[in-house]
Length: 153
Image 1 (cartoon, rainbow, N blue to C red):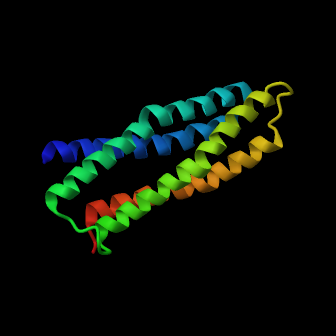
Image 2 (cartoon, helix red, strand yellow; image 1 turned 90 degrees about the horizontal axis):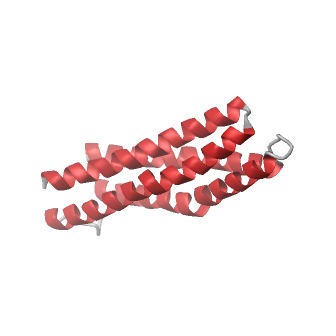
């Protein structure tokens, strides 16, 4: 069981660590005003999702399912585990339906913005949307982590 817990926590670290650092680098690049650098950062944020976030999710889900089955936790009632799973699922829906499309648009628009060295309105709109939903998609896994650690109900 200890190896499963280790791999589960490793997945959570990969997932949460990348979510938080991606936002930091994106915001820092936007504030710097160098559009060519911003374009590189937006591409690298997407790359980091494939290298860290996605594998983290896979590790979390696989080990979580195995441990749930081994320990016999009920998924038929509202408890800390079902609340954590629900929050994690909502995070995934936000990531797939909103954040990834915003990231793709920011990559495309930052590339187009390099022509006249001014961010396009489309970039700014996608970036604002990414910021708002990114905050939500960061707070939900933090709440998930709390439920997993504290098991409050």
